[in-house]
Image (cartoon, rainbow, N blue to C red; front, top):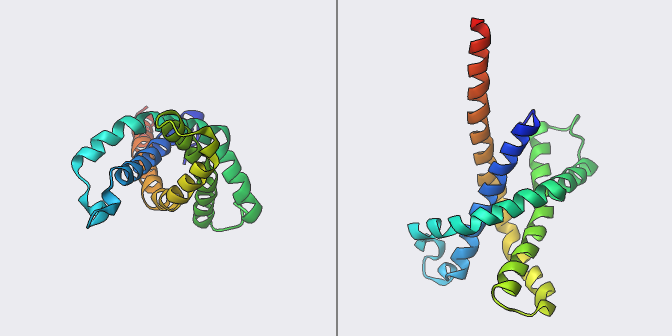
Length: 178
């Protein structure tokens, strides 16, 4: 896990963009009708992964911003109300904290997406925003939870460890030689 502010920023960017990328694949696939086809998501093509890169590039910034402003803090605060990070199993605590953070970030990002894609870009009435937002949360929460637990978090941790464990081993070897 991150030990410095710089490492925290790198880990946050990895998590933010891996979450944004996965969620954009899911949402664009639904928007383009893949779910309604025979075979559903199994009909995805390579083109969707390229199309997603554009939306994920700016949605990842929103995820990073809002997770740092309140998502991570509120997720941790809620997790600490129900578990003790010093006494409970560290792995179970980490999973519970992730779940709590998803519980904060999914409604947040669903609101951002509802405003951006439905109200601003699609021209739906702002008076419909509460209903649009609730529908977006209902659609996105199961995927956000599962994507975070089984894809984005393991991926981000693996890449983080590759970057910083390799760096630490290299620095240790340099220190040993001096």
